[in-house]
Amino acid sequence: MSNSKNFEELLRVAGEEFECDKVVPHNYHKYYASHLEEYTGRSFKLLEIGIGGEGREIGGASLKLWERAFPQAEIHGLDIFPKTELDTQNIKTHIVDQGDPQALIEFVSQYGPFDIIIDDGSHKRSDQLTSLFGLIGAVIPGGYYILEDYFTSYWPVYDGSTLAKDFLDTPVRWLKQSIDIINRNNMLSEDMRSTVPDWQIDELHVYPGVAFLRKGLSQNRTEIPEGDFTSNQIELDDLRYGQYKNMFLSYAQDPTSNLNLLIKLKEEIDAKISTLVVKSQI
Ligand SMILES: C[S@@+](CC[C@H](N)C(=O)[O-])C[C@H]1O[C@@H](n2cnc3c(N)ncnc32)[C@H](O)[C@@H]1O
Image 1 (spheres, rainbow, N blue to C red):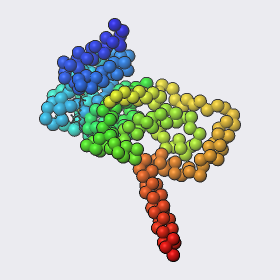
Image 2: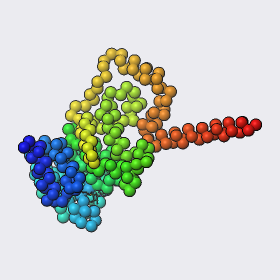
Image 3: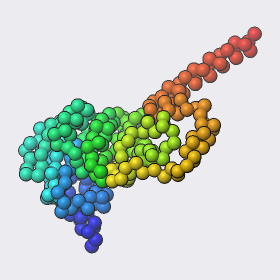
Image 4: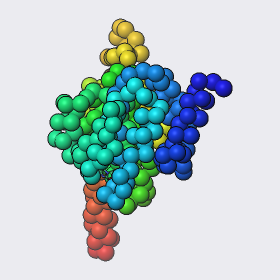
């Protein structure tokens, strides 16, 4: 068996023992195995948002799983409920609300940065985005930010929507945006580039239910050729699409602006139609 298969088996067995839903029913352990196998035997820092059990049970299945898989790792867990019963030499739990940007800053300044951050907390759209924006900078180069159950972006109970999915700011939108983020340095327009955060990620791995963003080791890589290529391409882009620039920029900054634009357009069209109707009656 390959090392990766051995590691997958270790995660499966430990996950079943601790009743971790990463294994049953989600089957995420095979994706974790292929990405995190390289961390075995190393000392590193892992943070997981969401310890489990909420206020009813103690939870901690995944923290125990990580402790078994990575005995040399420093493991931190965040939850809004106290979970100190789970603390061991390797595991430290903290009460931190993942939707509170200031609390995240304070936590990171005390315990960060991390090699791996996993968001398996409330799964609410705004909490996931607050954590992603607040914590991606706390992942070291070469490390991972992992989003579990990102499909909640489509479900109203978590503040998501299937119908309005293209008009809402959701984790799924930011996973799609990650292609732009990875290619930030290949963008020709400074204005458009400024709408794309500089997260320094250079890998995006999306699986059913779980997505891995990986920080790059080298920075500022660009494929833009030397010479007058840039000015030439900017001019051509501007000739073709320059008249819509403000619309494109406002959409890039805020996806709901597309909805506003459509509403405005509809109002203008309705107004034109009513004038035409009035005229035709004369
Ligand atoms: C799905 S469970 C986590 C399961 C655990 N990661 C595992 O794999 O065994 C979600 C946890 O997130 C916690 N939670 C809910 N809202 C939160 C918030 N705003 N900040 C931090 N944790 C939160 C809940 O209390 C619950 O314990």
